[in-house]
Amino acid sequence: MSQRVDLRAGAAGAAPIPVEGSLISGMARSIIRGNDADNLTGLSRSTRYRLENLGQFPARIKLSERASGYYLDEIQGWLASRPRANRNVA
Image 1 (cartoon, one colour):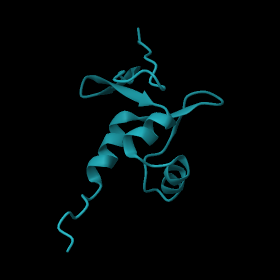
Image 2: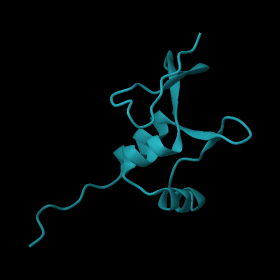
Image 3: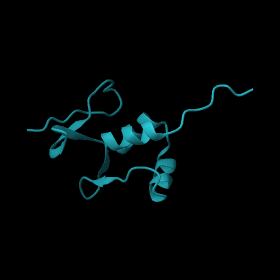
């Protein structure tokens, strides 16, 4: 049985929602909602949508008629692929 954890404001340090039946190397994939993706990436919703439409950000998954989310591992992979800022600017 899956366990739902509230990730919205006030639930600091809460774990993402495990998704049953979707396995990666024996581990359940977790889904996060848009606000959590914004908090993880530091992007605004409009920037996230623009990058998604350009194919430069992971695609949303449909959760219900009016709800969507992102696979946490895809967001983490996207973050890991981003270049680091150059700190040695003169």
